[in-house]
Length: 103
Image (cartoon, rainbow, N blue to C red):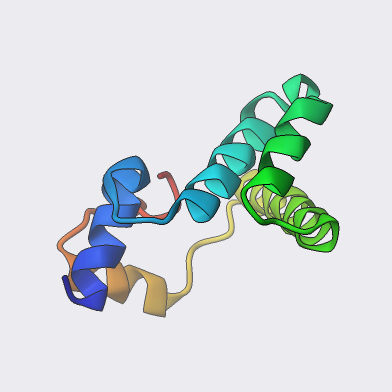
């Protein structure tokens, strides 16, 4: 699988992409932190530690997840259009406009 095939697969359905267990667990945390942040419990953090994530890495990931959630809401609220490179990348991957940002 080349880089573009992987990117397309990841965008369309990251859960079906070939990812290692630590990455998959962190992405699940990202989804939960985005959709239901109040449901993350100590056991979720402990699970990440158990598969190799350090406290510093978990902290940094949660900070980045929170920042992206924030900045995406600001951009959506203000009607900010995606950069031209992103639109071109979607075309290159055979995706429809906005599919990357809405996945």
